[in-house]
Image (cartoon, rainbow, N blue to C red):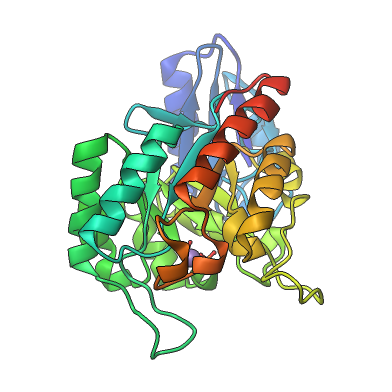
Length: 337
Ligand code: PEP
Ligand code: MN
């Protein structure tokens, strides 16, 4: 539930409400705006006399949150959240493009890609260092060596780094190198991983599972927020449908839906949704038109030689072309790339 305090509520009035709620075992999330204080309280409502709470000095109203996800919901917070990654702000006018190879393969491959995507206007470099694959015989990633290469690429380009964390035991290790932790689609409901990442202070990109409903996706985000990590960015990356031509079906309707139900920034990964590079550009533009706050795009200097996801990777030239066209779509919407 949300307790909205009067705009002139005194500090001691706010403290008394907090004490009452904490005494009843509620988890408190305080939002102190310029205008007024709003108290989010998550817990067992049957223990509470709502009328008595509403009668406390300084309280304007008590509003129940009807959705199963609480901290994630628009009912909890009606204005858009902005997630900060250093000096970058995700969820404002600027559409942040995170680009790079599926996997970190070598220093040369990563540096070359990093330079090219930075030149084209990306603000974040992507690259997987831990790559458990559908086949156990496929390339599995460079692990910590790959993380070190990402950190070096950050040093030389100024790009921020996003990389996937796949195992609760490596959250601390990956957090030492990454600016943003990525939770992969297959791990969206790995609740032990979510709980561990919730303890990290790093911003998180939470991918939607290939068969997850929007509600399940938001519930996964609730794990992160209720565990203490408020820096959550949702990422639509395609879902499984009956259509076999593409790798997945990009559910762009999930963008306005998630933004309607939640205050969190939403980005789109057209590369994994589509699986074929030639359709990445039109769907990236459509994602921006649908209201996405950012994009996650695979770029490889030589897609034919890529160890992972070559068919969906853009060449640096194709990425440059995409970025310039994206700028035109963004400007129509009053946004910038
Ligand atoms: C990735 O972005 O590297 C990845 C594995 O994507 P997904 O989790 O969406 O399949
Ligand atoms: Mn990939």
